[in-house]
Image 1: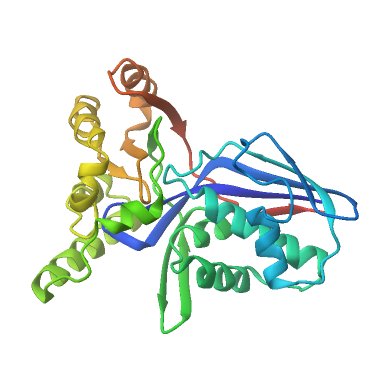
Image 2: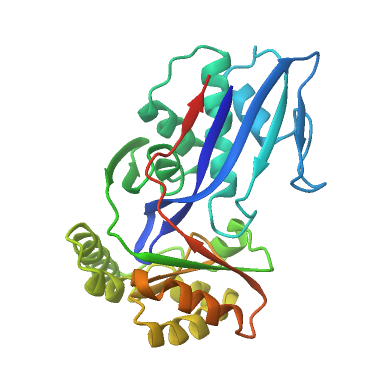
Length: 288
């Protein structure tokens, strides 16, 4: 059995904790023969456990404690702690592992519900399951989601060399907003969504960069965003935004400018990896 889960980019500026897109970077889990104990074979670094302490197995056993151990091959090109949904992808894979080995017959909606309960918000897990562009809410312990096609657009990610854990990035956010600021922030998010759904990338980009929910508080943790945002305008970029909790930034720009911008971005004096990205339209995939 082979399970594949895409990377995700959440928030898109003002879509805080509710909007996300699936990207063409993947966690792949291959389930091999049964064993006397869980064994995870991977090349993800010594800090990632190779036994039942691995998040993949912890997630699966939380759902179905009676699962029989297997030898598992695990591979991922989703960088860890960079704002691209690395932990969400493992949680989704763990739920699907329990679903298949335990014959639980979960629907995609049920997988999203379980994952959201674990994560606390659906912005990463929903697109990881459904693919494409997903708008979701988690209110009164209920998950609602809508999947839509994202406009055809070029995407260039800048993935810094340093990690930024979600707990640290969330730690700089305010605990409350004034009613006036909340209305303004919500109106910006609403216009962004409407613009994306109508294919108006110029307006969507303006709204993305007007976010009031989180980016202005996290800028001190990801100072490179200003340099990239300013530089990207030379290539007609629509927007540069902080992916998830960061520190990765993603620039949306015309398709014909992707190669030129990526090439020039690599020459900037900022340490990190430049990636040309695309939308994943399939989401969670399982081959038995």
